[in-house]
Length: 146
Ligand code: HEM
Image 1 (cartoon, protein in one colour):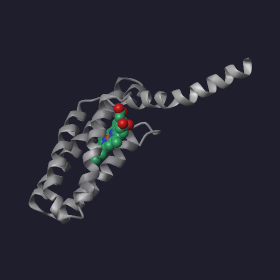
Image 2 (cartoon, helix red, strand yellow):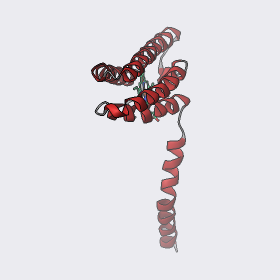
Image 3 (cartoon, protein in one colour):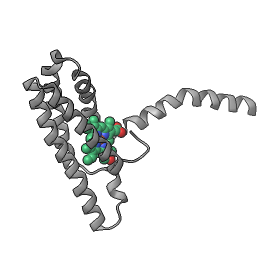
Image 4 (cartoon, protein in one colour):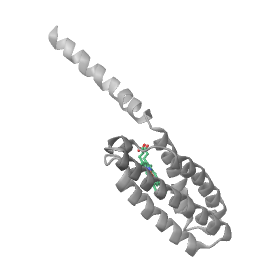
């Protein structure tokens, strides 16, 4: 009987596991939601660099990114709670907000470059934005996520 009970639980676990993972994935912070929304457009934007026919669409995608990046400025990253003391928290938020404001500024320039059909400028700005993304994530985002 005991044997069947463990088999039952083993089978139940196999079926339940995907739902547990699902619940975890849905549990996003508001900032993660904004970042995810930016990321969706970001993939299209990077691919568009190789194809001037996609520049007009890329400019619209960048506009969407600007909306989400602007919203992100006022949001608090998860790691803020780990900063000890008011001074450290203030410094952390200032650095994070500076990074996000820079991102908004670069995105606005990128939108203009796509609208002007300037592939060289757009490539340069995408590279700058990617550096800012990497540095921002290294400093302000928990390590276990990408
Ligand atoms: C092109 C620009 C960027 C893209 C496409 C992007 C994308 C992402 C993605 C996909 C995530 C993971 C979201 C999730 O776990 O569901 C994330 C998280 C995060 N990103 Fe970005 N990111 C960008 C720029 C930045 C910059 C410049 C900063 C900081 C100055 C930043 C700070 C963060 C933080 C703090 C998180 C963790 C969320 C939290 O603490 O709640 N990101 N980002």
